[in-house]
Length: 138
Image 1 (cartoon, helix red, strand yellow):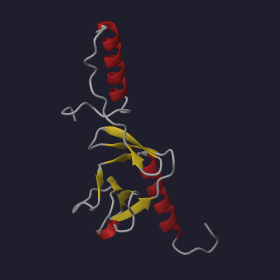
Image 2 (cartoon, helix red, strand yellow):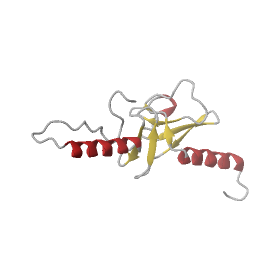
Image 3 (cartoon, one colour):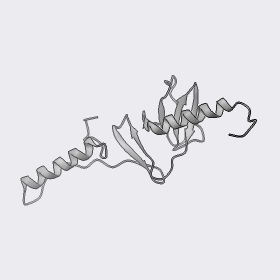
Image 4 (cartoon, helix red, strand yellow):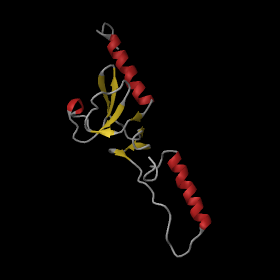
């Protein structure tokens, strides 16, 4: 802040709000339209071709604080949790989601021990939110 700067509390409050959004990196989901009645502290990933108060902020994180939307441009390596998808996302030239892994099946030689180990590894990755849950388990 600069000496003699007007409305210092505004800049400090906005900095605290942005820090709060980044420290609690969770979003409700992704949308191109802001919700009609957002809750205080609610965050979203702004979808493509955004409109309304989100116009021009595609791909950014929108956080609702003090009856205003604040926007954060993502940086490479940033991670965030998407509540709607129950999955962690990471940013690398756009938000990336790890695709679901289909269950192991088929093959001419069936090794139950190997299949059980693979299934446990996939389950551990899903529990850690590194993989999306299986379809129908959201």
